[in-house]
Image (cartoon, rainbow, N blue to C red; front, side, top):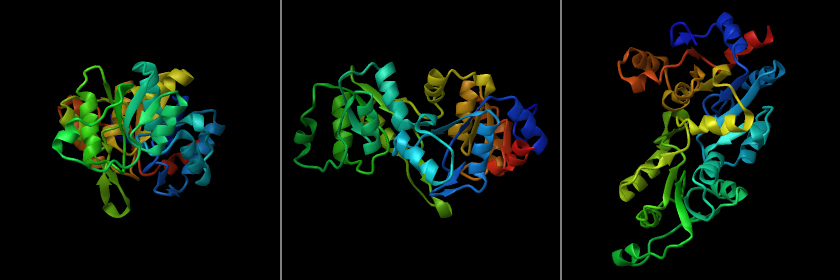
Length: 306
């Protein structure tokens, strides 16, 4: 860890930091790519890390792609990566429902086809993918038919989110034995040009409000995201570096799990926000202070190639 937190990473510090870790976990959008374009130099960083004997993993809150879909995108953008190095919330939610919740029946899914596929791959039967238009009147909505085999409600990103989906989730969650899981709480998805669209957190908050219940969240900054990786690969947290562009997800995940943390400035959060958190007396904000920051992940290339 940096002697003083929120330290700019120099070449000399980069060498020291990289010598102290065996594994590097990367967020994706805003860190190694933006949209459909790789961050300049990022593929070379991943390749150099692996040549230097470092394990590399990709950890993302995006639930719209399967592991294989992410591996395909990484390959297309010039990264050396395999599907088993990718940990997205579609996959991690399926693992959580199977291994932690012990689900052996069906799940009502507010989410994507990618989430459906990941659930099916672990033997869970999802219901609900696709549009669900309103029909009937309020009494019909309250008496909507429910599948008695549904054991959990899972909420991820769903472009078809609707009043009827919200209502069905509520009706299932009126059963206290029905488990409630969300992929992540990101409220906005930043786009190029400073624009944004509503994120999964907006949908999850709506379901929580309607059901008057709080979901168990799987994605960053939940420690389960890291546990999902380390349970498969036996990582030592003290030998891991988390690299991300968001203080409230990536950096907080690192803080929650005892990882070293590096903020890149090619995405959402700024040094000014990190400095404000550092000066705050709020314990939660203190968890959103990186050990180091860097303009772009490509800036560690000289240390890797030395």
